[in-house]
Image 1 (cartoon, rainbow, N blue to C red):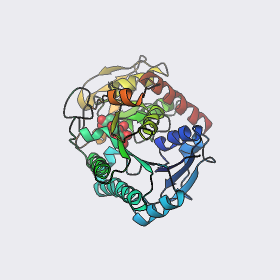
Image 2 (cartoon, protein in one colour; image 1 turned 60 degrees about the horizontal axis):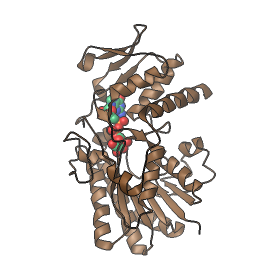
Image 3 (spheres, rainbow, N blue to C red; image 1 turned 45 degrees about the horizontal axis):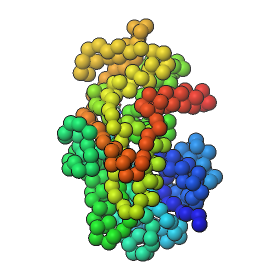
Image 4 (cartoon, helix red, strand yellow; image 1 turned 135 degrees about the vertical axis):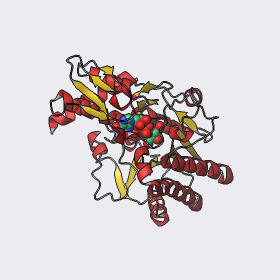
Length: 339
Ligand code: GDD
């Protein structure tokens, strides 16, 4: 029998890659966004999926709207990507960030419980919940120490899922997702900002990039790999939470070097702090620092240990950071050439 998946917040990169995976597996895929008639669903279009996915308008923070949608769609699996996803922005919009994450998951949990549907629920939690306060690779036994309005909201949503699982025996679980990227990533995230900037430099439309803390280390993977883990999590006999991460880290500076190398420019670094610059082999300054991109509170290192997901889900990554960078730079060059 055809299974139905409801993807709440389908417009982002995860919604698009998950739709692709589930359609391939023969699912009926229904996606929601706040205003489906106005949304361009550009990521679904980029993967040529816009006609294969049914799109509904749903406000995840409005209980009636969630109840109506879940009752109408009758999903077997629900994937929750709702909520304001930028950490930097969460300091400017703390209330919107908290509400968008906590109300959306509460509404979904309550609706699943209320309708007594046997729907399985996946919630996208974040590696940011750990706050980066201890070095080394973090695993599922490490305590959360959220250090931004975004991370506080994600941690609250995580605990709601865990509470409902325990109290009401719902099949509900969270993937504690570390950074995952692709050419569908928004320009407000550092990897895509870098690859888009590098593509513009390559095509002569821009001279240099301006970044914030280039010494931050992140554990980067590819969104296409991470949605496979989400699906696997909903196919297990028992619901459990899993870290989804690559298991290794790189600095923003090193990612920048890789992106420039993809267009044949070798960066060397001069100066330090806000005076640090990246200069190419021709002596042209390509990277400079602007403190306006610094975070009010920075998580310097985020490093996840995916051993539990590898062991219990049989999850394996296909992409390396080198392949992700090359794919993103090439896609950005291609997109700019089409404009
Ligand atoms: N956005 C941005 N822009 N970040 C910059 C810049 C810049 O110009 N310069 C340096 N950075 C640094 C940030 O300070 C941060 O340390 C790092 O680059 C990564 O920033 P983002 O790409 O914005 O991602 P994030 O790590 O804050 O959050 C992402 O990963 C989380 C999981 O670990 C997002 O995808 C979250 O939604 C996700 O939960």
